[in-house]
Length: 69
Image (cartoon, rainbow, N blue to C red):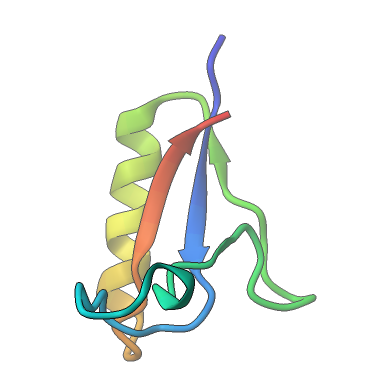
């Protein structure tokens, strides 16, 4: 059964297509700090719904991404 995990943008910054390839600022982590949780779900829909909730509640405009693991 596939599992889906939410990955969080480490540094909340928008993607800039003008950045060189080595500076895209797109580093993804499962936990932002030691008190954060690893969020894993059995369906993609559940994971995406929770990722959307996290994004709406985040004042930094951090991007949340769902990936199959």
